[in-house]
Length: 88
Image 1: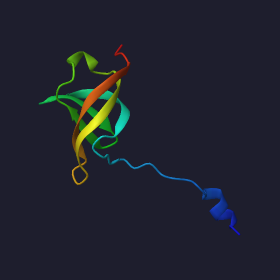
Image 2: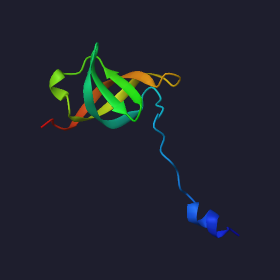
Image 3: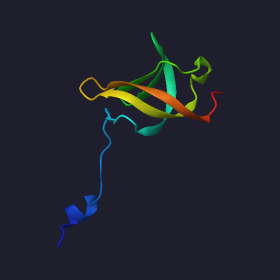
């Protein structure tokens, strides 16, 4: 039998500020800035570069596919699969 405390927090999970991704994962994200090699997506403190993305996608919501990811540095590269919401 669960205690009140256990039942209160059953199934509760906490988000991390540095999510990790696997190559091939597809996730929705906002294009938040520009870097030296193209556009950037930030998910918490994780930074993903979109080297071949159209510059007009800045501030758009896109579906991206992870191409590389380093869990130690929380950095990687991705490609845009679809535009979910155009930038305003």
